[in-house]
Image (cartoon, rainbow, N blue to C red; front, side, top):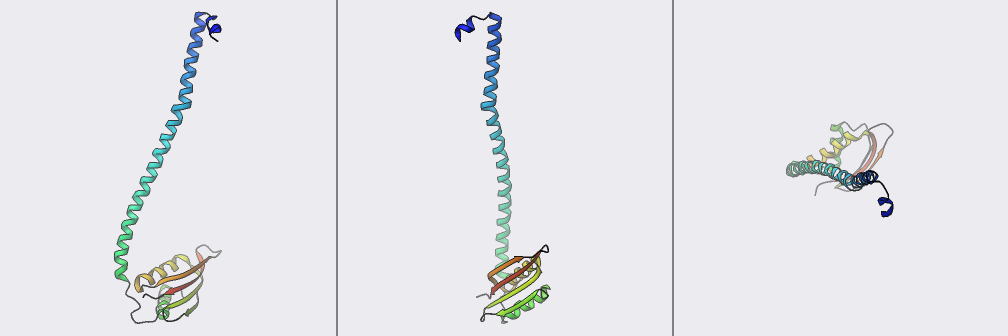
Length: 162
């Protein structure tokens, strides 16, 4: 290779050296700089996403603390009534009685409830209201999606507060 280079005219050697320098710069650019630059860009985007998630988590934590403080004071218990009566009254008040198919007691402190073709959002508001107002909590729940958007069939077991 050295003999070949020496056999070239000075002008040709200059052209070959310039081409080699350009090739070396191109290899360094494509092999080192470009991948590093792309990785830095990816990491910057990842940091931005994580900062957004962190901000959201801080807001959620503050909301959870607020709900914990207010949730403990809001539940007044069943106020001397049976769980069956409380659940029946709350169901009627929420307008879910048309979807109520069965409600049956399981002892003094447990009730099994079955709904068909009710709105999921309405159900969740009803369940949240039971918990907040009376301290009732869910022992078990089965939710089946219906073909109509937002409609579900639900079977659940509710427990009275201790």
